[in-house]
Every structure is written in C-alpha cells, then in structure tokens.
Image 1 (spheres, rainbow, N blue to C red):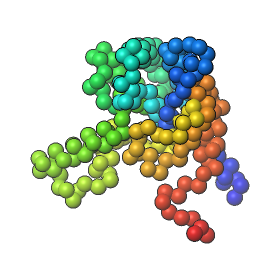
Image 2 (cartoon, rainbow, N blue to C red):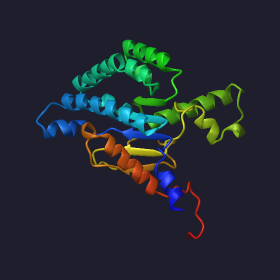
Image 3 (tube, rainbow, N blue to C red):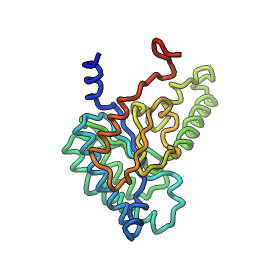
Image 4 (cartoon, rainbow, N blue to C red):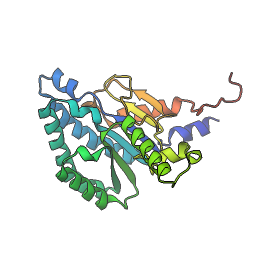
Length: 246
C-alpha cells in the first residue's frame, strides 16, 4: 500500500490554480511603492511557470487581475497594464520555446486594443504547444463568467436552438471561459488570506484549497512543492464516502 501512496505523491496534479496575493504588502514592508511589489510578482510568475513545467503540471492558472481590480487607483491600474504589456512582449517567446500554450480568460472588452492584439498574437503563436498550458485569468470574475454563460443559454432557448430540459451542468460548463480546460485539482492562495475572491467558483466545486503565508513575490518552487505535498495528504471524496467511513 505504501508503494501506491508513494507513486501518488510523485504525481503532479493535472491542474493547479494560484491566487497571487501579497504584492502590496511585500512592497510596504520594504518601504517601496506598490509598483515594486507588482514587478517582483512578475519574477515570481516566471519562476512558478518554470517550476510547474518541471514538476509535470499539465495546466497552471494564475489569477493576475480581477474584475474588481479595475476599482483600484487609476495610476496603479495603469502600472499593472504596463507590466502586462511587458510580460506579453518579453516572455511569450520563452514560453513558446518551452512548449507552453498561453490562454487568457476573462472579460477582454475592458482591455485596451493593443493589449488585446498582444494576447491574440501570443495565443496564436503558442496554440499548438502541448508541454503545459498557462491560463492567465485577466479582468476575470467568476460570478460574471457564470452570468454570461447563463445568458448564452437563455438566448439559445429563446432562439429555439436549445430546450430548457437540455440545460444541465455540462451545458453550463461548456459555455464558461474554461470550457476546454479541466477543473482545478488544487487552488493555492498566497499571503495568508483564506478566501477565493470570486475565482473559479463553478470550477472549484471539488478543488482542494491550500493557503500559504508566503507573499507572492517570495513564492518559490519549494512553496509549490509543499502545496502539492499537502494536496497529496488529502483524501478527495468528491461528495462520496470511503469504505468504513461514517
């Protein structure tokens, strides 16, 4: 039995998602502007993508900018968009060389035209890569995603293309941003906060949650490995019970 457990502990989760939190606190603790924390956060993204690829994770999703983040001060939003442009211009070629496919999910209508072009180009360039998929949740809010999926179902019913009886979990899932992406096995949130902040609410129905105290700019491969080790100590029942349990 121990051999089976050992084999399981050596297997990476298929899909790991990360709520990257703590950039602002990292900067404040050092007497630096929040922008400095966001820049160090980009370094942590680079490290984590490489670590996930080395560990054999099939899909890595990072929560980079939420729909609520648009309410932050205009200067901070502008700085974040600048960092996004920098990342899309400087990192995509390296992702491509590493066999990583890039996907962006979220409400892209709020993004500028040049950022949308950079995203389109990056997705097109990496479309056929199969080593790993990097999903960037950008201008993303899970409640809005579910509302939009429900609206699409309603429109299809109104147009006569779908009957109400045909609406089930699969039908709704197929109309989410993540229709072709497996649900996450593990969600990690950094910085010690213990909430999921409107992130993958539908998809995380049976996801294991691991909260770590490390601030995102300090997140390393060892932190990722520790979270995966914690994941493997869990017994995933998916609502069922195991033999002998009550």
